[in-house]
Amino acid sequence: MHDDTFARRRSAAVARAAVSVHPIQPERAEGSFVWDAAGRRYIDWTTGIAVMNIGHSHPRVVEAVREQSARFQHLCFAVGMHESYVAVAERLNALAPGPSTKRTFLVNSGAEAVENAVKIARVATGRQGIVAFTHAFHGRTHMALSLTAKAVPYKAGFAPRAAEIYRAPYPYLYRNPYGLEGDAATDAYVRALEDMVSTTVGESEVAAFLIEPVAGEGGFIPAPGRFLRALRAYATRIGALWIDDEVQAGMGRTGRWWAVDHEELEPDLLVTAKALASGFPLGAVVGTADVMDRVGPGMLGSTFGGNPTACAAALATFDVIEDEGLLARAQTIGARLQDRLGALATRVDGIGDVRGLGAMVGLEFVRPGTHEPDGETVGRVVSESRDRGLLLLPTGTHGNVIRLLPPLRMDDAVLEEGIDLLEASVIAAVSGEGVLA
Ligand SMILES: Cc1ncc(COP(=O)(O)O)c(C=O)c1O
Image (cartoon, rainbow, N blue to C red):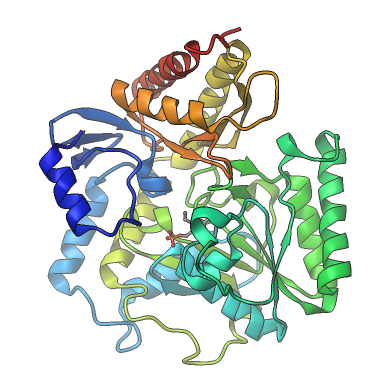
């Protein structure tokens, strides 16, 4: 926790719009832990919102950054060609889903990667329409917020929004309005998408579909593989591109490099950021050479994009994920979380759904016996957990989902300790209401 003097300094100096979920002042972080100014240790399952997948201050990242910044910190790729930019592009091209030859363009953030993917898609197709989905989050810049679904606090007040953006229902099976389950529900979402596009956008107007394979800010909702396969086929059929937003789900979080790898699908463009450079600002658009080469020289650029220090951090991050077997570890962690939290859900009426892909797991809270979102309980779980030494974040369009983003290097003892703390916090948060079954 921080002291009152610090709280006063913060509110006097920092924009009111920049909020912090936890009233803590981190001083040091290492591996799975964060220590605050009072010396209190927390297990960190926020990982800086899906950034520190390999844990805090991994020695190989620290060393790579130290070495690069001592040699040179910045020149700008538009001025001279540093090798690490090319090396990151080569690495991403090799790791990107699908067999086609790829090209990469580097930027500073997820929102900037989304912006550039839209620019590329429009130039490459000569079309304008972008079909995004409900429950989507794609960032806070003007185009990105226009593509994001939720009005408050992301879009309201920032009109006029960007034009030629259309929205289809995200395949949120737990809340599907069709009264169907499994494949039948998924197929209903596919029909709704195709109907919306053909009747209100026009199939020949669509430049790209933009989707998160696991909706992050929307509530940790994995899109069924069947839906993604249908989307791929539909995009191809109507001559549109598929932009895969892996900013939150990518870089090993789900147990494969990219969430769409679980379905062996190849998007035309993939955007990544967050965990790409373990806390250093770096984002990327990775696309098929066929699409990327349709954008002419000088049409994309950025002063800081692909800066050498962030590239050094990214190269070390790729190595750590590979050398330490973190894709397999993400699957093990995810399975254990689903196992124990699934068991908890049978004891707590208010947990409506436990879902996820790999180590990206969400717990959706509802008013017992209903599907009505319960954000208040989630708020209590988050603060009860913090008081016990576990940092968590809420998510979801209605703020009623706890998202779990544990570091992938976390050992079993810390994993079990974290789950114990989470269980105790959930029980404390709901016990006042008598909803324990
Ligand atoms: C799926 C997704 N896309 C894009 C973004 C925007 O990334 P950034 O905050 O780096 O601009 C985010 C951030 O949370 C995200 O989760």
